[in-house]
Length: 165
Figure (cartoon, rainbow, N blue to C red):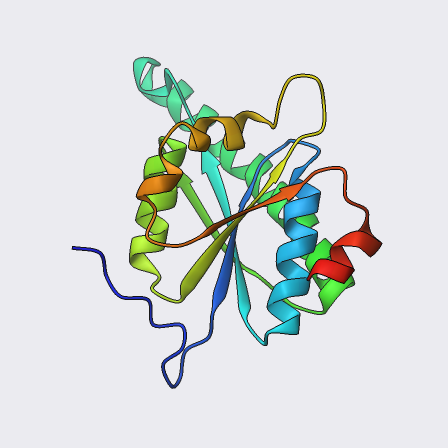
């Protein structure tokens, strides 16, 4: 059973979920979600997903080191995008860092936080397609999410996003 969203109940507010990664288009998703959250008096959750393939096949000390380094890199990336959200919209997003398959982690975070009402992704503008996250989710995973998915074109400027947000 899909839990009902609580974002419009008293004491709750709608949250926009953004998956933070190292793609150039990630900034577009953060910008748009920040502006939408501020404009609707909502909140924002930045999700960092660590895909640590093969880490469990390493010696314990090596696996712990790999995991710690990945967490540190993700925290730095989240701090960078938090500063961006404050700059463009005056909001401070929540941070969540998880390990695992992207679609499964996104689904779990949405399930756990019933104030999350919209997943915001950005599509890349390069010749390689819309980007790894949009490509993987477009393969049917997004249809199983209990919330709408907004895909922001990566080529939009700040001004164009302001007009939309």
